[in-house]
Every structure is written in C-alpha cells, then in structure tokens.
Image 1: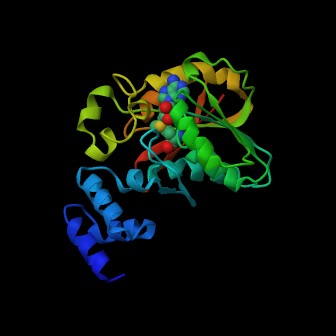
Image 2: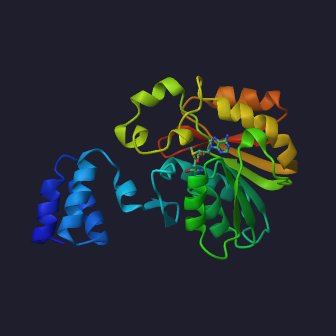
Length: 258
Ligand SMILES: C[S@@+](CC[C@H](N)C(=O)[O-])C[C@H]1O[C@@H](n2cnc3c(N)ncnc32)[C@H](O)[C@@H]1O
C-alpha cells in the first residue's frame, strides 16, 4: 500500500503510536481524502480508531461500536475462553444471560460458539442495546432487554451460564484513565462507585433468583479485585470455583457456583 495517499496519511498521523497500522485501517474504509482528513483530525484529538470507524475486533469477529458502548476489549476474551473451556460440548442447548451486555460482544461471541444455545442480554442503557441489536442482526438467538439489574422487572427465569463484565473502575480513578477511554467510552460502562465494587454487590443480591443448582457464573474483574469480589459472592451464598488470567497474567475472570 505504498502510494502517495498512504505516505501522506502516515505523515499526518505521526503523532499517534502506530501511524502505518492506523493509516492502513483508515484506507480500508475509504480512499476519499476529505474523509481521511476528518478522520485524522479526530484521531489527533485522541478519539480511538475503533470509534471513528465504528468497528472493533473481538474474539472471532468484528463488532459495531460507538460512543454509547464500551469498546470490546481483548481482556474480555478471557471470559469467553473460560466458558468454552468449561463447557466443551458445543452442541449443548445452553441458556446464557449477559448482565450489562453493552455491544453484546460476550453474549454474541458465545452464541456463535454454541449453535443451539440462546441468550438474553440486559443493559440499563437503551443506546447500548441498539448497538447490541445491530451486532446481533436478524434471526439472532439473543434477546436484548432494557433492564436495570437493581430493579429487574422482567421474569427472566434461570440460566445455565451467567456472564457479566460490569463497570468496575473506582470513581476517583476515572480521571486518570487514558483519554481514549475516559473521553470516548460511556461513564455508565466504567464507573464502579467509590471502591469499584458497587456492581458486584448489586449483582450478588439478584443472582440467586437467576440461578439453578448447576448454573455457572463468570465475572470479569479489575486488577486486584479478586479477594473482595470473592468475599461479596460468599456473603451471598456463592462459592468460588476458579480464576482465569488474561494475556498479561492478571486475574481477569472469576467463576462461581451457587
Ligand atoms: C463494562 S461495560 C461491559 C459491556 C460488554 N459486556 C463488554 O464486555 O464489552 C458494562 C455495561 O453494564 C451496563 N450497566 C451498568 N450498570 C447497569 C445496571 N445497573 N443495570 C444494567 N446494566 C448496567 C452499562 O450500561 C454497560 O453497557
């Protein structure tokens, strides 16, 4: 792709970490110089490429993304892999619940792997649910419901697998996050309250009604939160099964059972 447009774009993007890679991503979307100039201006202000192009790769496919949802993160693939490792029979007709579904990346990636499974994704953000539905497409085995887990009004029933990547950043830490995160991911996807654990405390109280005796629960957690999350879950009658590390060797996912 060594042409004049590419060289111009790399030069224009020289303030970012990987200008050649980003230039290639932009050129895959358009070769129109006026559009590319607008992309560069947004990028140099700190907007992530994923938000400009509305596309982020997660697990095995691309997801539509926008400022209404958390960009799917490589760390969260740990959760998908943990579920797959524990449920190796891909023909199972599993029922899966995703609490705080955002873009739908966790639930939809799991449904891709279990062709007979079906799932429900809930989120308190209507705008996020529009993104999740767009990612699901027609004929999806996922249902997306506008629900706040602090006051569930739908009778959801029980599920074989429950997954959640809730907001877990302590409020005071948000100001110190990268500009790409704090300015472009929605606050409702980040803010976990004073100690970052509000969502786990809330979820632990509603989980009993959503579990049968064999239900497996998988939580994504922030760095160093494992002891506190285990304590919250134990207080609510759940026992810890296993921890899973992400690619950076940080404990990222905890598995629990009733
Ligand atoms: C960290 S994002 C995770 C999104 C997606 N599951 C992922 O892994 O990329 C957390 C999501 O939880 C949703 N959320 C936060 N509080 C909620 C609540 N009380 N009830 C339902 N959803 C909530 C947010 O709107 C956000 O979409």
